[in-house]
Length: 397
Image (cartoon, rainbow, N blue to C red; front, top):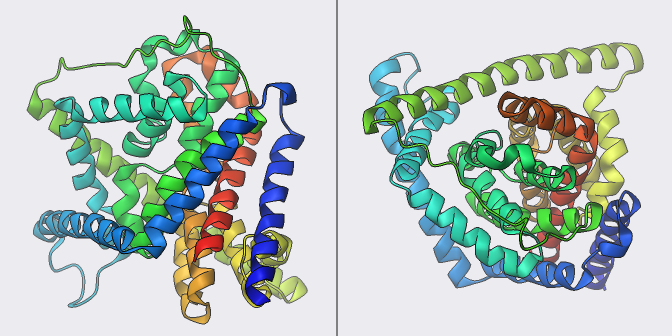
């Protein structure tokens, strides 16, 4: 009976997600229900495959091993520069979690330089376009966002940025906010179980298409569906290395600065709320988000604390939320941890609106203004993607 009830709650959660997406749909008559159903079935199959089978276990173990080796190599460089700063057996968050981003960024640069990454992104995007009923540009962009990052992805399509219609711009930006870039995946794996990181990346890809197909449906004409990928190879190999090293370091510094500000601000707000009304700000947010956490499949006894972490991610970023999750993880069941972990693996937060708008505006002023106008709707859609992924995982674990 308990199992049936869990499935019923998850089914209600799915209905809520689709209803909330349908509520803000721009063109309800154009929604491609067949494609949405196919992608939802693919999500369930992939989640079950990754989390419940020997194949999934071996695959995730292999990916985790690769990132373990990458982090070990990154730590060799970090130890050379910062050796002796940390106490024996300890690793400050900045050194152990953020600075490895520099090395991962270098690897992405090498794969870009030798045209390996553009080739992979283009053909995976082409195959996805056959499933999702969208254009090649939208499909490519979703894959590229997961590989090169939410701001860098727009550089790869800057040749045609000026001619992209507003509804297509929404889809491109929604994909960028719903996924996470490969440069920070290693950092996530040091904070939450790697199997949930890998699962969330895969499911968010399809979840993004599902939600956008409801919120922002449209048809792309064959003559409009042209993909012009920026191929900038004027740099020498070592110029490229220097650029990607600095880009990775900038990301690490920016994330570190945001963490200092957001964690301190959250702590300060919590203190004020506890002094005035005897309950922390995060607890209040927890009560607000608890019903959503419950419909994601989280037991009610964990729903309030899980809701607080969900809200923390939304108002700050996923790193702050992962730190908060780490502090209370031992008090949660494995089922709850799995659901909340996959929810956290995306860039869906308020600061991402500014990051994406700024990235597009830097390449094309007019399109940047278009993105700024639908900023909140972007966050709304990307949050629904995270909730959808969490519900799917709650169904299979």
